[in-house]
Length: 196
Image 1 (spheres, rainbow, N blue to C red):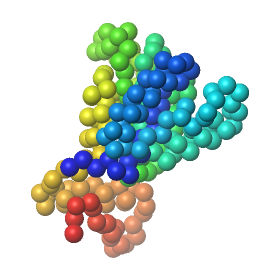
Image 2 (cartoon, rainbow, N blue to C red; image 1 turned 120 degrees about the vertical axis):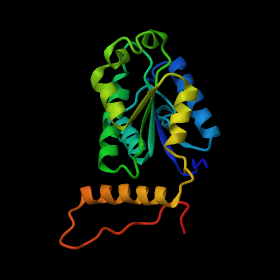
Image 3 (cartoon, rainbow, N blue to C red; image 1 turned 90 degrees about the horizontal axis):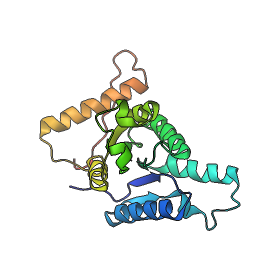
Image 4 (spheres, rainbow, N blue to C red; image 1 turned 90 degrees about the vertical axis):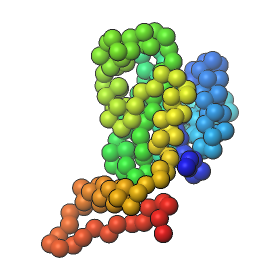
């Protein structure tokens, strides 16, 4: 069962020329057709020239913070510097609140990078950036792979009662890591989607 309603994706990537903005807009259209809400930084500003750095930072940061998932387009010989910052921020958000911030999917379609796939460490992507992405997500090599990865993060899989028990145990373990339980206090297990 696909659950995309109410799932917000922050779409990160270079946006400094018509081709880059057109690519990001095409990716956003594909995601919106699948029912996702998508934050695209360049859509927030009517004019791209004469922008104030404080306003750009606040707007982009708010968009990143409000997202459940990040899709970052990382084509080029190196990851765009603004995209790298967004990846770093979202990686930290995932660590702080994994129930809200579910992970990062990186999309690389650049032939220069694809040729390095499996040959160079980090597939030729900056190792720090690749490590940040893979710590909470994955790197994909086509838009179809990226969309499939996003769907995996938003699907509700049918589960046996034992599967629900395992999910509850993971949820409880996460809560125990975030707070300390005293004595015989037991964490409360909240209901999960699809349960009564």
